[in-house]
Length: 42
Image (tube, rainbow, N blue to C red):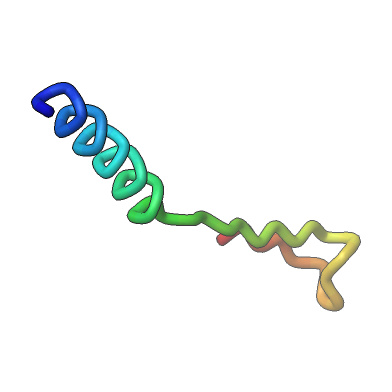
């Protein structure tokens, strides 16, 4: 019973860690892609 509890707790912690991961998106615009010739990195 104790081993089963440890396995369930470990799997639950792993799933919770995945669920709280933040995503990151970058927008990169070069001189050739912008209308006024400017660069933008966000």
